[in-house]
Length: 124
Image (cartoon, rainbow, N blue to C red; front, side, top):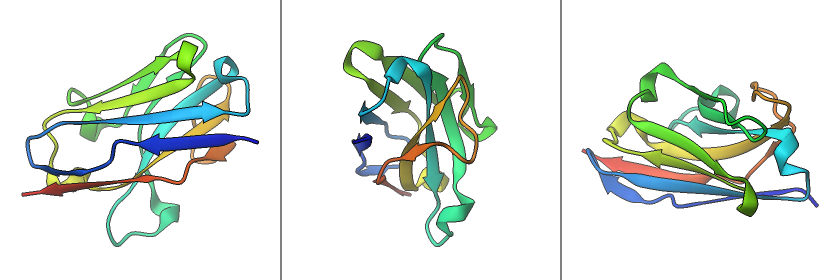
């Protein structure tokens, strides 16, 4: 059974930091790219924004312009876990963060698997 389990979401003040984790199981981790998406408060799930992604095979990364320089995605292939380190959080970073996996080196808006999400709240 494929599972993507997110953790680390919390309430944090603006300017603070959080680290999200996504633990994967049930598929060959090294063959997949893992990405983080966020669903802003009040917006439909279909409108999730891609935040960052990483290829488990070669470590290449991609970031949304809105998070470049503040967020870092990394992968621990031995633990089948991807992390999203977030610094200097802003109120507009709030939302439900979903982990997703797609076969290959990039994650598109139609990944193969989704996690259940973890809530990030940023107070101003």
